[in-house]
Image (tube, rainbow, N blue to C red):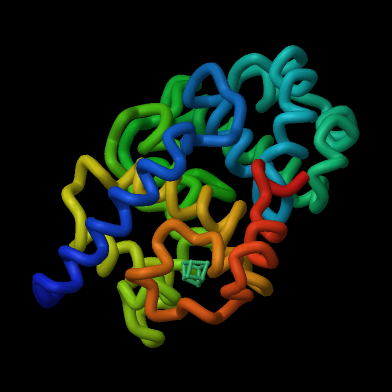
Length: 236
Ligand code: SF4
């Protein structure tokens, strides 16, 4: 059982989250999808690439293979060609064909709405499962990706030991917030990481949560220099 976090930390974390919610009212899932199957496929494709690159290939992919049964029966070479721009296309094709076949065999071709079932699918880890649960099933989920880990470490929401492990991070951050806030919290942090709190040069001088952030100064604090580092959308 995890220890209860200190009240002062809970207050500070929730305050920062409220400020981020105001700063990024449009924050949300940046992958385009129409149903749980499409989101699952898009999330698998998003590994090691940008959401924009995924969104560029999925319309043709989904037009050719609208459901798990169609993708399970697909010609591997055709799928590889369609998803090639997302990188690691051979491994990703293996995952997509494998998970589609598993959906057909185990779940009648439908995407299950439970974490335990999702993580049994080939190529689907906890991060992917939480994205699908949170955005296609309205089941609150915390998505610990590279941005999320970096930010909660800088914010001092979790210690170095915790931040080294995504599952520990998921539980520790989850304990700071109401369950119902988990999905949007994930979006807002990832959004902030993509636009402002960059890995190498965070735009501290233009950051809406700077006054509560112990890592203020990790990047330029001059407002003008910092403002030039802020991007208005995720990377291409
Ligand atoms: S103050 Fe700097 S390190 Fe802290 S959240 Fe803002 S950009 Fe990131």
